[in-house]
Length: 235
Image (cartoon, rainbow, N blue to C red):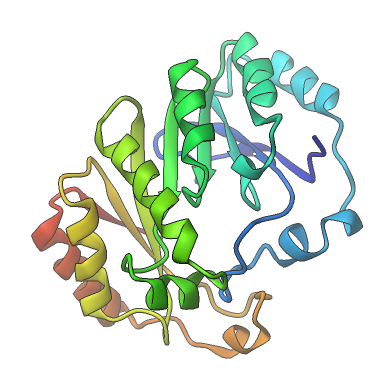
């Protein structure tokens, strides 16, 4: 497995924990608002970070780093993801997985084998083919079944988790957020975050969009919180 990015210390990628972050290349979605453009579309243009360098860093910082976030791209498209998680767990670090939920078999295996401690699953849109295809930039017909399976796995509560949605102008309305909440109702944690301005995006037209206003975001938040009390806003 090629690792295409590493952050030694992050205070924002795992709530309440000091983490290191590993970035894996490529993705099976093409979300138009995604800002990891090169990581998704041109990973070969990014330098590869040797795993031994990362493991060496973690060994030296055992008393400072709480856990490691494995993100992407989409980590679960890599068959050797369990090997990576196993190497991290051997050093007694917690592991958080960021995922779009499209590989339920991989996620189930990681949970069953004790290789991950936390899952953050992005929910792009209400669970309809039209909405999800538009938000993910991929044909969502087959993907929605898999996303539904991962959603159920997390809701069953065998691992700590959160669902999260990036609020994007032209893609989301209050009705959409209500639809998402109805599918994940009863979840332990739902996180809303506003679309970022002035960053490179997979669809260049999204780069020109203005994020939702504070009042608009708070309106989304109230809508979600009425259905899921454990809804939070992430800056």
